[in-house]
Length: 141
Image (cartoon, rainbow, N blue to C red; front, top):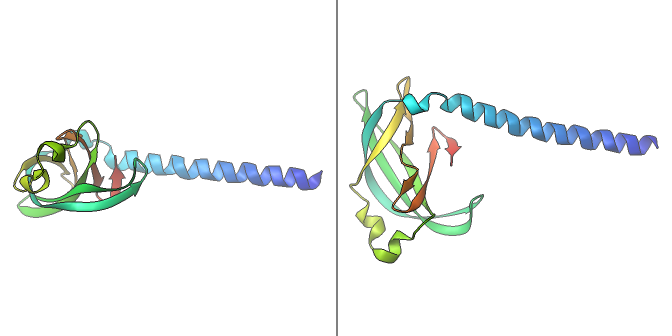
């Protein structure tokens, strides 16, 4: 009986620990992005485009369009990357040169005025695809 109780206690502690970790990650993510909807907006430019393999989470391993962009804030240049995940349409179906045609496109970037290298793309859907981005190394989906 004591062994069964010990095992039950171990399972309870493990479950609680996992919940604390997930809750902590969510609180940290929200704290880091708090107020970001009021960050200043600047214009960014897509500088390069290609494909990369992503997997796990929202989609199985697949090749998705990936883009690098630059923007200016407080007189300095910064950059970032984002991917487009299939959502409502496949833009490549209508335009086989869709990915290279994105180079030079202007996009709206919000940046943290206290730390201008921290950014996010205001658009959540672009060309019928979901924008997958990172906010200063913290995933935002």
